[in-house]
Length: 210
Image (cartoon, rainbow, N blue to C red; front, top):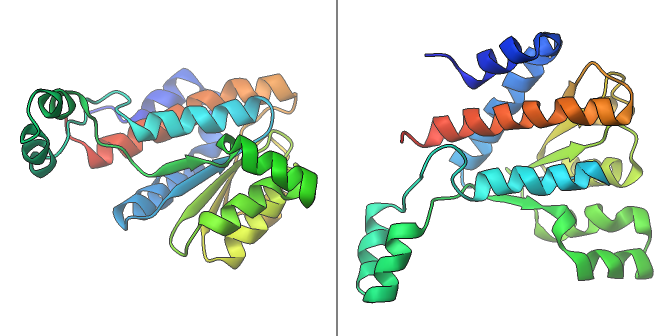
């Protein structure tokens, strides 16, 4: 059977240089989810959209249907017609929170504390040891992503960076850094999408059979 990583490298052979780091990121995320932990994701601009995109692939079915487990299905069906609707439609999710998605809190942090503290503050409030942070920065130098990574490390989280070729300062901070071989922002982002799709596919296949 062809794996998501094999398909990724067939379609984007230039990403072979990232293979070990991509595989390490997949293993880390699988370990976090298996232990009941949460993956937090952050980024700015286009990478902000990528953070929310990644969360969307984990929180519901991506390429697999992921039906609700039998126990939940039975409990829902006891509620009658609407419970039956829920039982037939709900999909199992994997705990992923985009730090980008707290508009009121983020604006309060930017106003009351420091704009570069936004993701760090939300992560500090929500994270616990055994969770993980995926920080996306095309340059690897986005200060709010770096500050969030420092908070993650102080709180006992596993840390993953997704950057461009140079990796910037995130290389020095993150446990794993996936550095796609491009430097211009939009070209980096063009490679980030197939990378994180492959990661999401691989993790989904690990936890869900059908």
